[in-house]
Length: 230
Image (cartoon, rainbow, N blue to C red; front, side, top):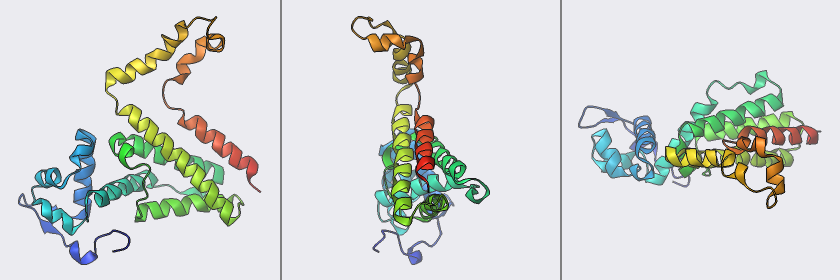
């Protein structure tokens, strides 16, 4: 199929050896759990088959390959992030901010998947709805169609770019992440003023460099969009 999805007639629900009724949702649930526990190497038909108690070849009735499955997992994250979101009840700026926070939060909850898939196009139902929602908010702001698409691209790349960056950071071992955070208040704060005068001038505030800058970037972007809106 042109879009990479498995035909419906190949998705009949079948029980595994353990009695579990196999389906696309069950496989996605298992993949999401395994990648979260063991990292990208867990996304293999062999490990999924073992975890589900089925022959690995049975998974090909639902997904063409592991990349197809990865896109379905990413789409599940988008769907969960957007669940209950009602942008029609709020100002377009508030709606866009809420949408960005939801998607970023959804990927942060699954950092190992985010590192693999935040930059992918899932071509699935939840992503379709998310794109439609985001462009709709920008059209409501008064942007012309071409501008709405261009600004939505900037918006979603900002959200997903920060999600991937934060996910990679969160996937670090605790001791490395802690060392990086402490460096701003320790190593940087002790740099000699004669060699690094500007760092020395803001020394009491260097700890602000630790953690995510996503909310600040999102607010700057929405402020710029607000100023540019007709």
